[in-house]
Image 1 (cartoon, rainbow, N blue to C red):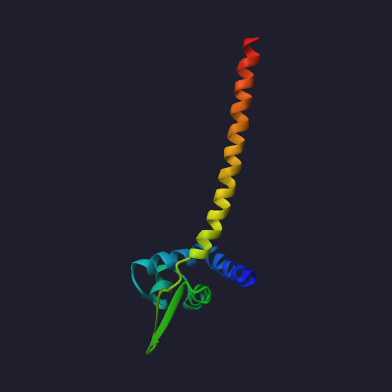
Image 2 (cartoon, rainbow, N blue to C red; image 1 turned 135 degrees about the vertical axis):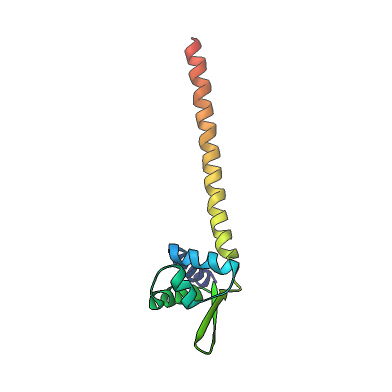
Length: 118
């Protein structure tokens, strides 16, 4: 299970690491689009956009359907819940560390005030 989750996270984060792919997801959140429309919108070749869509599709973030000669893209069923949970775990870890650092800084400030009065 852990290994599957790790592979799943790797695939998702790799797909999300590219600005064009994030842009495609944003565009598809508004409306379905053909690969040709996406390629035109992002000023790239059809082959380049097919590769980006393929990466998103392997990550489960996009689905495609071919009708005739047109391949239409739409957002996939995945909601990035496991990715959000992974990020949240690290956010909580860093919040705890920063809270501890705040306590140290406050203690040093108090000590400085006391030492300054002497």
